[in-house]
Structure formats: structure tokens, C-alpha cells
Length: 419
Image (cartoon, rainbow, N blue to C red; front, side):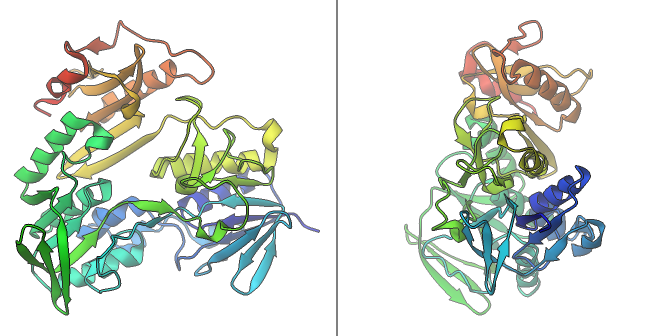
């Protein structure tokens, strides 16, 4: 029988995995199964340029399915998996596989008590979500509530202000993105959103929702009330693994993999992208997930190659995580794992006259960095971070080019003042 690779998930990770197995000479069948009706698209645009109308829906699509030699099954959900039989279950079919790539991504987390399903209460995860939000915005000029102060919530708030909409952002009682960027850059970002006209309700409890045909009423626990045109719920996401219940695969905040992307206990299944939780040995043995665009690209290619090579012949997947966000015209770039840092340093840009960036240090070596509108400096220091955190070697400090700020982590604000 002809060998068959099944890829569960037709998003970015699924697309790049299909491309990679063909690049490596696999000449069997490749079947890609996706729940959405579209080929993979540029998901970061949903909360930014697509929402504002700067690009069209067609501009976000990444490929023509005919360009990749695979059988594409769109609008088709995987419903189960039988690893012992090497079968993926669809609604009305069992699909045999010789190798399986799990790339089903994540699903938006639901906010308890919120009127999900109402046309003016939306999430921003898919193309259809953003189109639904645009439709709601067109039919009412009122303010918009954004519930959630993570990357998506902050980006949506920024895009809505760019569109001239009044925005109320609900979040946790602390600085925006402090758990991702650190408390001091979080405070800077909070001030930026406030200066650009975003009304912040941090730590505010919503007591009651009053959905209506033309909008949604929100009652606060302290008795205040607010009527908005629509609500964007952006309270995080969960790995899309419900179809794997009963398959006896290790599931713990995603599909648990070894360093080579092989699912623990299997030689014929790998996972990639947002759904995969694996130990990036460059930063330690603890499995983690990286819900970012570049990781989906790199991990899917590595997982596809390692599926063909087998667990014994595969290298560990040890990238330097990188991602970016744009808010109110400021490009925020992150590399490594800043939250592993126990101290912060000011890293000078190699290009004279450009902004420095903030480095996060542990044991005298860089573990992460954050730059604001500093792409050249971020590129330079990311290469240095990779050198210092080389997989298989002890972290190597570079005191001649890392310049600490006095006061350690408590002096982080001085590194970002004026950015």
C-alpha cells in the first residue's frame, strides 16, 4: 500500500508541514484536514491590518492549495484518533495513516457568563470572526468593549482607536502585558494606551450582561453601567485537543512531545505549532507551548522532517522563540524567554542613533530581550542570545557587550524611559 501522512490542521503549521514533507522527497499520499473553510492565512493580520481594512481578506491567504501536492479537505473536523490502529476518525470516515502530524492549534477561551453566540459578542481567532466584528462595527457607531488585556486584546484596542472608535479595555488589576513584557514595560504600555485614548478598566468586575439587538449593556460590580456597540472577548486560548480525548496520548496544556516533536510514547505521531507542548532544551527541560507565528512555521518544518527520520535519527527542536506585536504604531519585538530572567540590562544598538533594547539575564547570560521599534538591534542581540544559550553547552556570558543597569531588575524602567 502507498504510504500516507495525515496532517490534522490546515492552518499555517499544517501548510508548512505539507510543504516540508514534499521538499524532503516523500512521494506517498499527503492528506491535510482543516476545520476552517479556507487555506492557511496570515492570522496576525486579523487583529491589525485586516480589522482596520488596510488589507483585504484575499491578501491574507498564504497559498493556493494547488501549489502543494496534497489532498486538501477543508471544512472537515477530525473527531477522534485510534493510535493503535493508526486511524484518524472523521465524521463519516476512518482515515488510515502511516505518519500523523497534529497541528490543530488552539481555540479561543470562553468567558463565563458572557452572552457568547450573540452577533455583537465576538472573539478574534478566525477570518470569519474578524468579518463578523467588522459587520458589527458598521451597524453601530458606539463604543466597543474589549475584554482581555493580552496581546490580542491590546492589538484589537489599538486597531479600533486607529479606526476612530471609542474603546474600553477590561483587564486584570495590573499593567498591560506585565506577565509577558515585565512590569516596567507593562507600565509603559499601559501609559501608551491611555495616552492614545483607550479607556482602561483594570481590575473591574463585570456583574451582568444585558444583550440587545443594537448593542450590549454591561453592569459593573460597583453599580456603574456602560452601553457598547459590541464586545470583543479576548481572554486567551486553549489547545484544540478535545478530539484526542480517549486516544491515550499525553495531554497536559496541549499534546506533550519530546525534544524531537514526537508525541511522547509514539514513533509515528508528531505535533507542531500552538497545540504542541515540548521541552526546548535551549532553555531547560520543562515542556512549554509557544503560541506564536514563527514557532508554527519552524516547528512544523522540524516536526515533518523528524517524522520522516524517526525518533532515533532526529535532532532536538531548539529554536530561539521570537514574536512581535504592533500597538499604536509601536512595534514590540520579543526574543527568547524574558520571564526566565532574574535581572535586566540595557543593550546598546549596533546602529548609532537608534534605540537600545532591554535584555533579561539569568546567571550572567541573556535569556530574553525586548525591543521597541528597534529591528536592527533586536536582530543583532537575538544572534548573541542564541550564542549564549547554545543547546548542549553551558550558558556563556558576554560581559564586554552586555551593560548592566545599576539596581538590577528594579531599575528596568530606566532602560525603557523615553522609548
